[in-house]
Image (tube, rainbow, N blue to C red; front, side, top):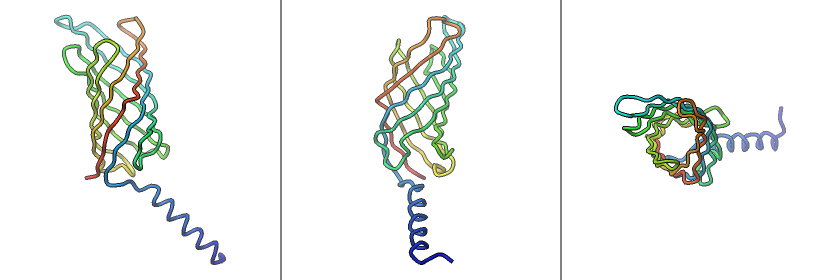
Length: 163
């Protein structure tokens, strides 16, 4: 049998752990996102270039409103020089819970505008939806068909709500 003080302390700590995992019903975030990855391209009809890409990286939030400070990101995407680029991303926190994001982007040279929709999540993010945007810088190797890419933004911002 536990002494009363120890039992009370354990109950208090359990309450903190539960409160720590709950997110507000809505919030805003901002921060940085950096990725590295690979892109494979080929020429297509009408002088278009189509590409598939995969990149991984880190999201570091400075304004969080209850979200964790850091996420690990994985994205798969497709681009066609005649259209906007599209990617699907998963941001995973240190607990293994994920946010799922649909990305659209337009790049002119090394700078691009990227918008995203948070379309759901797992664990404590189940039922989450939101929007995000950023200006990003893209660096790639000179090989046109198979190139390494690095991208970075310090203007990531967005908001979320639970439905």
